[in-house]
Length: 311
Image (cartoon, rainbow, N blue to C red):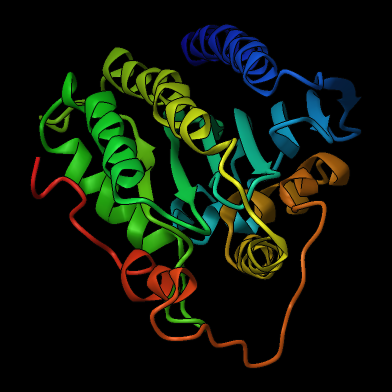
């Protein structure tokens, strides 16, 4: 079946992407290696999870590949695509989350994924999704600008319209309504991609854009890590980092589509929840002191911005 040929091609790319990212992150960390666990899903499919713990740079990080399939699309997938209810599905992707040790190095997340939904007598539906976003605790303007310049570069070869659309979608998606703040400084988020800018079904175009997003994650993130990983910090910065990690947990458990999809499809819980930070704290009615670096995070960096306005 033609769509299954698509699936094989995408899986080959995703497995290589996981290998490349893990190799480069190990070199960037310089102190720890990823440990791999392969797993099988009883209802169909499986994956390979790779986790790095207690490195020099990364307190914990995970880079996971999965390919799962089943007879019924889960509720998290059909909530915004109700026409797909009752279809069988294949879903594959690479998802990563990195929790650095130094509070001056941002946490980051990236994901690229592919779905096929099928029903007897009807045309198969397929689409790509993904993106990457940055969650700093002590943000710097130059880091946010570099991050968004690289995100724009990932999109520009496919059409000038993509970056502003996917940047806006990211700002909307990674938003915590109960806190009235974004999770960080954004980046890219897209879903349901199966067409080119003319609206024509175009696998090569959509797959190429997904690959470009996956391939641009490390060029966006690694230079920021290199600049900030040796910045001095104390207990105050560490405690603020642990407090702000709580926002990450809140978003992933309440709003994140990937977490809900994984749990609803009976995926491997340890792999799904590897996105959680190893240490985190909550504090009742925490308010940063005015004029501090901590207050600047709230005043400027947790609100959608045009980071490339002066570029």
